[in-house]
Length: 298
Ligand SMILES: [Zn+2]
Image 1 (tube, rainbow, N blue to C red):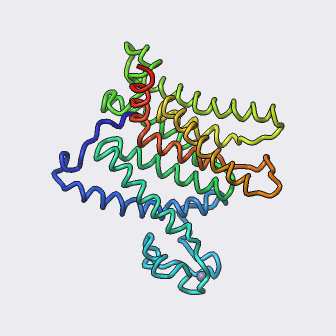
Image 2 (image 1 turned 90 degrees about the vertical axis):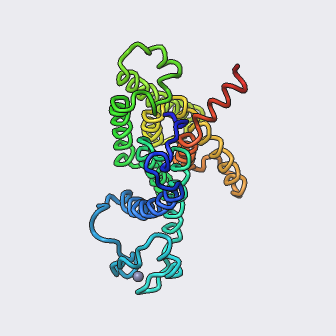
Image 3 (image 1 turned 90 degrees about the horizontal axis):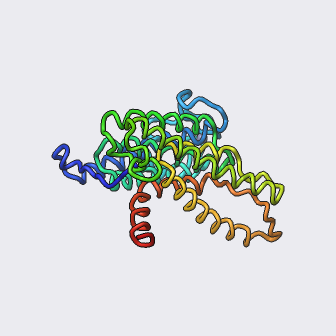
């Protein structure tokens, strides 16, 4: 996907740019509040629509005025209004993080057709990151719809915007099929991205299993990166994986070094790092790759 074309709100609608940033923050905080529900309920296979949020300790329904993103937690000093049970700081943290990520997405992508796609992608990554950190799973009910969403974007975007938002159309090997219909090229790019994104992780997992006899890589990671690959294409997805592996290895080494028994089989929820890598690749990947090619290849 290409991010070099940035339409500003000012040029599209004549509204000052700062309005876009304020709206991105408020909308992100509200979506973060919804993601808290997803993170809390999806691993337990509960409905994300019913019932309304309640205090897990006393069961008291949470009033609308106590459910304002970030602010309510601060006003209540992190405690339930009814029973004073502590409320996890994860709630305002997810809201603030999502709000800041929405600002970053708006900053990089601007007020264009790809903006809603990027916001859905980043929100899904936040949900996967926090679910993996708590439960060590990447649920199919999130990774499969993300794959479906990616394919939908890949099929519909070329019909409306030609190749504008799809950067891998101009890159090898999809560039070899330049004579074909744009939608066919776009879907080929998605399939290649899914195959390389998922396949690379599957190979690493298999190799690790043969070498050490440990099943360290779950299939959830493979499905997650197949979905990321379908949307971002093979280059950005390999970049996501390398960024993820790099940050994961750094933090993994710190965690293992701090342990007394130095157990190398400590499970690391790798989805956290793949999610972080995927967000960085979405926001800056095309620029990073262009910089890399112009600096080291030519
Ligand atoms: Zn309570």
